[in-house]
Image (cartoon, rainbow, N blue to C red):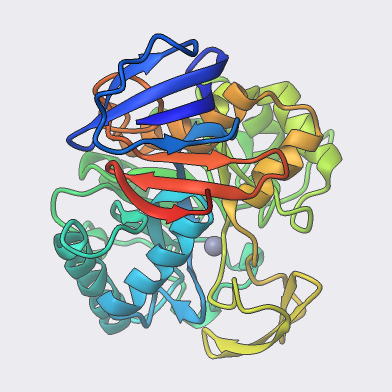
Length: 386
Ligand SMILES: [Zn+2]
C-alpha cells in the first residue's frame, strides 16, 4: 500500500490519499486519509510526494551509452533500468534510418527484451518499436542519416520492415515524399501507427494523409518546414487540426518555451504528448560521443553533430514535466501528456496510462523538486528513494 501521497487521478488531484496494489494492479484508492484498512503486506509512506501514472516515452533512441540500433537485449535492459529511475514505466525503442540488417538485429533485440522483461528485474517496459524514418524528407533530415532514407514504391517496402509480433509499431513518415500517400495507406492497412514528421508537406497532402489514418505528429515544431502565413505547412496544419495529436520535446533546447505555450493553447493537454527523443549519451554528462557513425558533442545538455544539427536530446521525460510545471500546467494535465495520451496512441490505455482501479500499477512519485522518489512497474519497485 502507498500512503500519505498526493494522487493524480484522471480529472483531479487528491491530497492525503492512499492506494492499494494487489497482484500488480491498482486494487483500491482512498481519496482521504484514515479510511484505509492496514491489511497490506507492505506499506510505503510517500511523505506527500505526488503519484503520477508512470511516464510512457514513445520516442527514445537510448541512454547510458546504449543506442537502440546497436543494442543487445541486455543493453536495452540497461536503458530500461535507467528510465525507471527517471520515472518512465513504458518506452518505445526508436530507430533512426539504417540498413535492413541493422533494423533486423535491433528489432530482434527488442523482441527478446519484451519476451524476457517480466522475468528480469523491474525496469521500464519496452512496448514495441518506433521507426523514425526511413520514409522521410531529405530536406528535413535533422540528425538522421541521408544514405538510408527511402522512397516508397511497392507494399514490399513496408512488409520488409521487421516488427515485434502483436506489439504496437509506430513509424514517422513524410507524406510528401515519392509514393508517400500510398505509403500511408499501406501502413495504416497493416496496423502501423503513422506519425507525420521530418516533413515539408503542404496542407492538401497533410489532409490526404489524415484521411488515410495519419493522426499524429512527431516532435512537433522540430524537423518540419516553419510556419509562414501564406504557407502554413505542417505547423499551421497541426496547430489547427483537432483530429491530430502532436508530441513535443520539452527539454528547453529543441523548442522555445513560448512555442510550447502556443502548442498548449491550440492543442490543449488533450492532444499533446511529451517525448524525450533522448539519445545514447543521456545520463553520461557532457562530452564527445560516437553515435550513428558521427561524432556528437554534448555541451551544457545540448547535443550537436558534425553537420551542426541538434542530434536528439539528453533529457528525460521528467525534465519536460518540470519545464511544463513552470509554465503553469496542472498535474492532471501533465499526466495526460505523459501517460494517458501516449497509452492511447499505442492502444494500451485499457491496461495502463492512468491511475484507475484495475489498471496495472505503473506509478511514478515525484517530490516538490521534481525528483523521482518511487517508480512502480506492474506493482514491483523499480526505483525507490523514500
Ligand atoms: Zn528521434
